[in-house]
Image 1 (cartoon, rainbow, N blue to C red):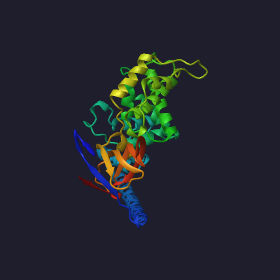
Image 2 (image 1 turned 180 degrees about the vertical axis):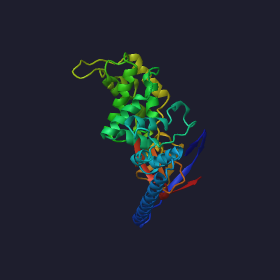
Image 3 (image 1 turned 90 degrees about the vertical axis):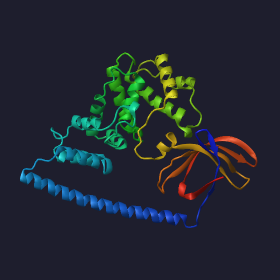
Image 4 (image 1 turned 135 degrees about the vertical axis):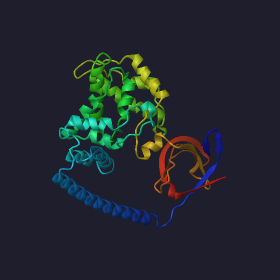
Length: 349
């Protein structure tokens, strides 16, 4: 059954597997690798040509159009690598002081959207996943850029949750735990500097920020299973507001309850520029049910499905909460799984 508005439609699907499926996948991957090598070769040729043009401009004393330099730098940042985009801007003298950490942080801050409440009104120039990866890098220069980037946020008139929502809307959190640690540590320092009386120590703000992200996943990610209750959330963060070698201290209960009820009412908007699994599970285009024809043993009787509807052969169909039948006995079970759309056929009945 596919749930569309309040109307119920029935769909059934039959898995399609061919004997040469693995070979087909291998051929596709090899073709992808060849294309990637061709693209890299073309990129090197373009870089060489642009370097020659730049040298000729310098020889002739021609001043480059900085708007054009900015657009090329943004394109390289987004589609090659963040560091290549920054290097291009430095090479072409976009930064007046040569590309200090403060200048790079300002460039990142100015070219991403920060108003999560008006999502979609203004398009971010930089891909936010690339911004997050760059800010999370452990190199000394990147860490200084991260500090400067956090300092560009004014949290003095923001509640904890508004500040966290705004901060995390400027980029996409990377997946590596050490990168997340550095990014959230800078948030905690900046927020506590602007609001010195709310937390006893920066560690309390840091841990509450982490716990809030986990709460958001528990309450709004269909693959997370059972939702976290208010009491469970309180228990998770009990006694966290203290520094090293200090006695445990609880956060203000009104703050804890405000965070819980706000997240329960409105999920975090997490930037995700690629339509990957994170986007699929948290922002499905459609929700519905699938049933499978045939068989009596371990039959998928009914599956609640999240559809990622994209016009791509690499599209995926993901399901989470599933009711399964084992030898005629039906039981509810949380299952996370996915399969390529190309491996199934769907028909409406």
